[in-house]
Amino acid sequence: MLDEMIGDIAQSINKGLHVSGIIIAKYNRRKLDNAVIEAIREKYGEKIYKTYVRTCVSAAEAPTYRQSVLDYAPGSTVAEDYRALAKEIDNQTI
Image 1 (tube, helix red, strand yellow):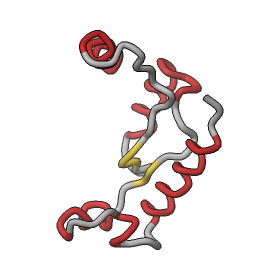
Image 2 (cartoon, one colour):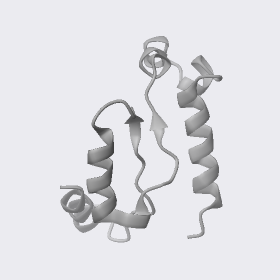
Image 3 (cartoon, helix red, strand yellow):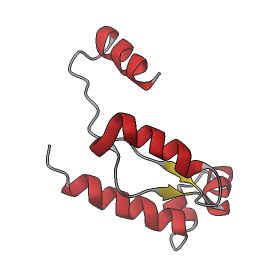
């Protein structure tokens, strides 16, 4: 499904489109997320960023106040995850 979407966009809008990485977001280790992540990892391997963005109440509340989670709850786990992900992407060699 993801491959089809990327292919459709590349064909119709952006012929130079490529995926530099896949972000695992709304991660909750207490649910069945690990089985889904393992299936994604089998298909996409190293394209998956090592930093997972966990879910928390702050992430759901922030849009209600028209704020990013970084502004609304800068000390939350999800804000920490987004900062770590930004560093990982910034350090990535393209």
